[in-house]
Length: 512
Image 1 (spheres, helix red, strand yellow):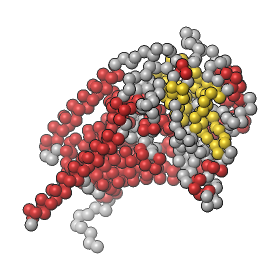
Image 2: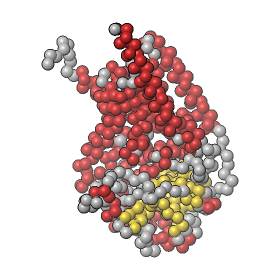
Image 3: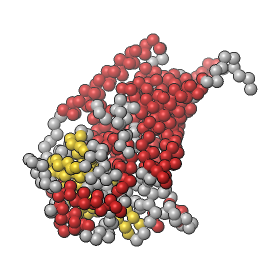
Image 4: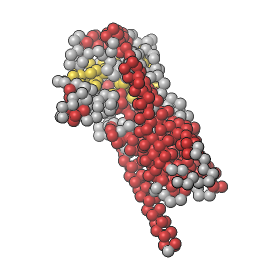
């Protein structure tokens, strides 16, 4: 094979390295950095790189850079017991980044094929990246984490999630980034920059107007107490500490309200808060009820049934009576269960089977909990809060959202803050306040605009005593969800493909 004259063997590694760096720059728009403007700049420079090199490879490198920066927290669970699992941490990060890279590679590679000429190919790249976010949100049980649209959380632009959801904001993000490359004349691209700036300014203004629009007052106040016990994960189940942490929950529950604070109407404990099973509580539930002094308590607890175990939530009333329960439906693959574990059991391999007590089993169905005068609530256990399409937006519509979680697995830097960001987006999308009790943080009370009213940061021990914020009117997103976006994506992709095909046919005729 003859090497072209002047070929520099370092060229390709430099290009793919630049793509990875740009992917990392896009990642800095996500929590806890929230540098939305830097993410937008990095995306703007990534698009021509995908146009003028191999888009599949550029997407793979950029996606891996993005995944490595945003998902670095994936190493933290392996260091809870580092002597056993620590060696697996770099492999987990590599494969997580690779998975993100594959989605970006397919999106950019296939998207570039939709168009003919730089403007239409650039639009194809954007549609491909948007399709990658969409696919990642739904396929293989879904993983809608750190979507492009999430970069706007700390700006008024995030309020448009009430109309188009986080995925729709991702399409806006990509549209702003691609604007200069839709102009075929390089010297005129500044016009596209002006149009993009005007669009962003208009969207920003609209979001600010929504933030300034007062919410209707709640007819009857609902006063909540949100617990954060701060039980480190490496000690949480240690027999020498488990009882101590349980008593810490009881002490926080029984703590008198601060001066001028009303007594709580409902007390929230975090996920897997207690060291006993719901079906074998001993005196545990009576102790919870005694500490609460008649106030109902929502707590995270594990439940056993035959050889199956469930990650559950229970509402405990006077005397320790169980008023309602909910079993987590959307479990974390490889974290709470092994995919196809029960299928393996049919051929005699039971080590991964939830039906044999190895991992959790999924709850039978999602449901709302009617708490009487405290309203109808949608319970969300940990990871379930990241799935907008699994929340009941209407028919029936809950009055508020309740999330219990244990983010102690994911360190103290980025993972817990990204999870909090997801919860805030659910509040915006559905116009519902959200109360969040986390084991080590971040516990928060979030209003229907996604604003954090009160919070306890990572590593703090304490309670939040505050009234539940009002519920906003039903949002457009709650009515229509994500599917209109998907239909629009297919329609625009079809138009691009058909236009490119006709252009090729016309070119062939002219040449003939």
